[in-house]
Each structure stands twice: as C-alpha cells, then as structure tokens.
Amino acid sequence: MLTKSQIISLMEELDEALAARGEVGEILIVGGAVMCLVYNARDATKDVDAVFEPAAIMRKLAAEIAERHNLPADWLNDAAKGFLLPNFERHTVLDLPHLRIMAPEPRYILAMKCLSARWDSSDRDDVAFLVRLLKLKETNAVFKIIEKYYPKNRIPPKTQFFIEELFEQKK
Image (tube, rainbow, N blue to C red; front, side, top):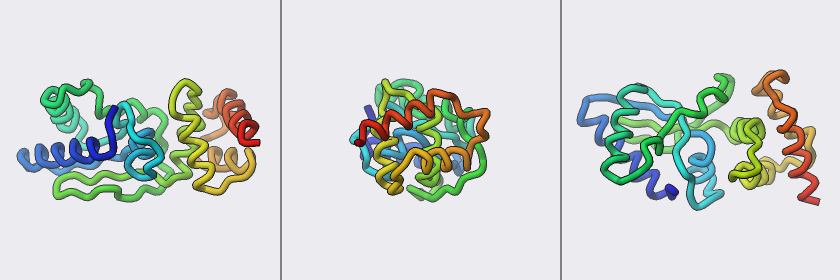
C-alpha cells in the first residue's frame, strides 16, 4: 500500500528522473490516489491509477523506480484510461519542475467510482465520502452527476444498485 507521503516521494523521484532526461511530464491521477492525495479520505492506496505523458518514458521511469523501491511493477498504471472521458475539469495537485500532477474535479471522481461500483474494494467508502463532500442527499443527484459525464448506455445496472444500496445504508 502507498501512503500519501510515499506517493509524493515517488512523484518527486519521477520528477528528478524526468529532469535527468531533459523531459517534462504530466500525470492525471484518478481513483484511490486522488482519495489519498487530494481528500485525505484514506490512509493509503494499492497503486496510482493515472493517465500520463510522455507515456513510454513515464512507464520506463516508473518501472525503474519500482525496482529500486521493491514496488509492484504497476504501482503507476494507466488501467483506468478506459473509464476516462475528456469532458471534466482538472486541477493541479502537485507542480514540480519537470512533472505536473493533476486530479479531476470531485464530481467526476464520484462518477468514475460509481461506474466501477466495486463492493469488494474501497469504492463504497470513497463514494460515501464524495457524497458527503458534495452534500448530495438523494440518489437522483448522484445519477445526474454520472449522466453529466457518461452516456446512459455506458452506465451498467450495477451502478444503480450500488448507489441505491449506499443510500439505504445511510438511513
């Protein structure tokens, strides 16, 4: 598991590696990394889900960092890129000389977490946290947010059950 301070330290190391190559990179973090770094909603995350550029260089440098620190090879990965759509605001979380780390707005993170809707992960706690952060009182408000970012045909039935059950548990 990676804590907030470990993630920051790894990003600083990645920044130094980019600088040594004369490169500049950008990372858009999503998932648990956002919950850790931006909201302090949890102590740690198993990896850093993100999209990043320049992708090939970042993958190589991340693999080198993983080896040095005995981390899983996919500690920095782009597995979530299939869930990302371009229609959201982002803000800078950490701005280093050769690396900018950004995160989506909280409504988008909520929509992504609801779309994945994994009960056997931290998604439930993350969604509950974001619902409180955004002061959402009913399921329809959550569905409106999801539909702002994702077309209805991309929203699986499990998402509806996930949200309804979450609100039932709040009662």
